Length: 430
Image (cartoon, rainbow, N blue to C red):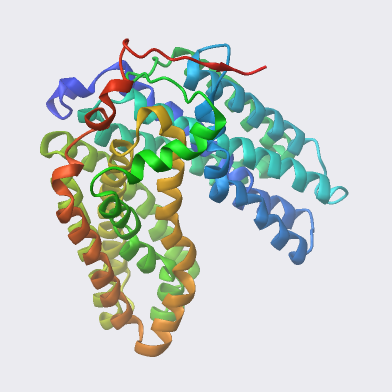
């Protein structure tokens, strides 16, 4: 089979080839400090209250914008501004996972929590530099497909470190499972070493004050800065509300069993992977603005499938169709959204700006649960899912309002800072 029949030749290069394995390395640590860790604690007989406290281990992922300026400011004395940090944080994550593996949840839960928090901190730091590297490495026309490939690698890593780890633990035990995954992370350093240098090269901030304040000043002095923020906050908001109580709706509202929902959601994961790849390919042909509009519209319309399911009642075939469509369109929308965030980052402050913008988008997922429950209690499930469609529309309107500015990549507003004329002036880590 000739891949160029389906993928434009311009998208078959070393930069894009690195996206899948790097996305895999980015996603691997997450489950080890979340769902997989909870399973380990439960099997070892740790009480529920202690397990609940362990959920706080994930805080670094939501607060990573606080130390992102450090990663923009300092340049390791090896492999450059981005790949140097990637190797350092990857090694730290692997070491942290080894320490977790060697710690007993039953006898030393507080020590395990400390090591898990350490892993989460370095994994969040790894995400910061990965996001910056992806943004600075992919060229404008590659971003949609590159983001899709990255997301696929990330989600497959979640399967390996989630379901794969649970299966492995039954055969070889939890300690060996964590050590095996730590070994995968060490092997992943080879991928980082073989990855190309970023295409966009900009001078690092000269002071920590510049690294903290300049990304905000640069962003808010752009025309349409408020419009960009509106797109970031609103584009995935309808999707966030629709997914916040989706499982509760399927089990409690319609009457499916947990197993039925689990099987269909498993299919949904692969539908998301397909949607992201398909969306990335379309984006390479149609451009970012049209993709944001069309994918966002499809994403919003897919929420209406749950309205139909609420009216029709329990139907496994309809459930599968609704979940598959919702995940395909959600994958397409995610690929477009990640490409948008990349296009909005100034290469001098990529780590900080990407962390800030992605944190703003995450607010919808974090705070959607309680309002959604109140709306369901007031109007019922079918009306709730119709309202999630309505909530998605302002995001499309925001894209339309700033469509002319979205067309430009980062070089349009930071051209003087780029290229060989402005080489990196690193602040070495001592």
